[in-house]
Image (cartoon, rainbow, N blue to C red; front, top):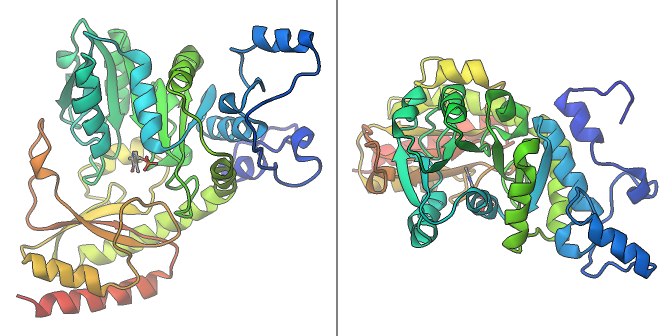
Length: 396
Ligand SMILES: *Cc1c(COP(=O)(O)O)cnc(C)c1O
């Protein structure tokens, strides 16, 4: 790093985590494949044991390698966190973070707009271990205070919400939580460490499915948790107790992706806005849900708290048959049909959260679709969608 300590995400992403002690002059760190770490002497083994709980100690493969430390520190520094912890997937980052703070008899508050597998974890494993979950309206703001109980340990946020993109009032929720000694966890996958700085808004633990934009090429499963100093070891212990660690090649892909993430995100943001605006003017579309579009329900808070938007958003069609929706999805050939997002490629997938939401009711004018705008030309994407809409309009 240069001595002046630049703060631009582009510069940080290009330079963070490149310790020449480990890279031996190469631009990038090597992939460390390893389980056993050999110590030169009995005494060194003892010293290592004494230091085992410090940050970035090389002792055993599962506890980290120079490459995992580089990835963790880079994400943490980009986001303004004290430290980072890698896991085998985004979902593992969520479950290990939740388990860090609860035990039998505890209660947690989770946004109704949460990523579905997070909800499944709360409703199955946490429930079985005696932890009760209350889902809350993502737009509750400081009204969250009324739901906090003496045994509440966690408020889990995700903003914007999965699929439905509600923007939460993060500072209102975190200040209510702090007043009552409740820890706040935020799934920050959509905004990445670049477009939202959760620690400035009072969040304690930020969680990333690095599978998405950090890796950025749809070629790996990876999670990163970042925390304040106060909670770093609590979360890291949970990750270690769970036996969590990410694979070495995966971490290499994650750190490689991070280098270009600011540049890629700018394009996802710009292209996403172009396609979202175009969609909002289509007669087939009832409504586009994109927090960065002026007029969107979340726009004002998005503008206050975020510095950009990713390429993922939703839109609602005017009422049409399932077969018509299928015609759109099948004929928009540049848009892949599949789960996940955050890669270089565009995706289009239908969704319907109405049968699992419990605190809020999902109401839409017609069928809902989630779109990821990738790095293709927006002219090509729009031409492709035109073909899809033509096919849709020919169906009953
Ligand atoms: C994809 C996703 C996850 C889970 O990440 P995986 O790496 O697929 O386990 C968690 N949260 C959000 C918001 C996601 O979109």
